[in-house]
Image (cartoon, rainbow, N blue to C red):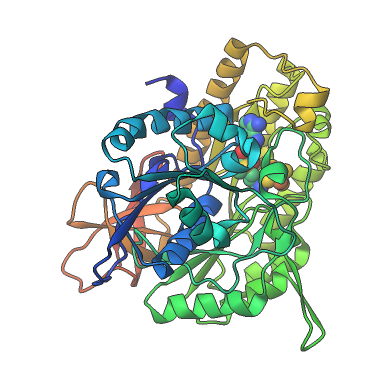
Length: 473
Ligand code: SAM
Ligand code: SF4
């Protein structure tokens, strides 16, 4: 495997290409089956649950085995070239099955569908449907069209669609943690990023439907929700019945009030938009997790300017200081891009030093990948040689490894309230859970009568770079 496959984490690398298992507790027999695989960010995984809900209403049951599926869907990602190559490779694997099972339909959903539109059908002949992220409601009609042998495409972006009324089918869930999508699209124009083109304009979902979804999840036994959006801090919704503006801070509070035992997380914050009010709301409620994903991208003001991130190095450092002042125990993580256009050794060192200042507990680290149509692709030359990009990424990854280990070592001797998510990967004698800072803690079950979804107080005795090890107190 190429080194970068191991070290440059694409959001949750372990989930890339994950197929959904059939709905939990679903006893229905289905005539037609669908198979869906998801790539990219959490938003795509969350969207696949909306797609599953729409298909379920059409009489489709989920299968984990694509060979028995009537409908095979890939929910795709365009964020870097490699993400697109993975999908193309996967499509070639479906060719054989399609040859053997002519009635089977193959659909491409998500960002790659939106980026390539009908070009996808020319490039990948076996694809029957191309459906963009705002067009999932039209899936039933598109399937019907494709069943007649025509190719079906809907890549219209919307200014309103939030799928607020569609209750996602929780597939492959641990029954404890779930995502709630609170907004769609992005109005920021970071020069490297394809998201504003593939996911359209930003729009916020009805706050009542978000709170109702959180309440419903809590009633079903879930104990943690992650509020999802490309830029959650610009959440903005007007409650016309009360003439009230719901900001992200207000929304956090509303969800926190669902129940003190329901933990709230959120992702992602843009450093320029996270407000003091949000930080104070996090500090005020015990069940809003003390953890912020605050992507820096680069530590050099000059590069940040080219990236159109709208903050400087100094401004970001002040923001991190503010977070730590208001929420002293707050965990912070980041996204970092190595080798953006014109990046010099000095710029790279600025990135390393801002990582050290911020003491990130964790980071997602990427090599810059030029995306067609973005501002950077149009304006700047992708001029850092691949070898230099790789070496810089390696240095960033090595530093992050050291910072993560040091951060974990600082936790030895401390006790944390841990939400149990399930058995640890290594042994069914141990539980795995997370503390409020989002750190994974593994501890022996002992003879306590605990179960998934319970909280336990755990004292940390030891650690690795990625995991805290402890015992129940
Ligand atoms: N909206 C979020 C934000 O602004 O932090 C996340 C967007 S994106 C799905 C996740 C991360 O991918 C970004 O924070 C950035 O580090 C990385 N990314 C986006 N475009 C990239 C590109 N062209 N090359 C390499 N990394 C990229
Ligand atoms: Fe992309 Fe920037 Fe929007 Fe994040 S905030 S999705 S990086 S344009």
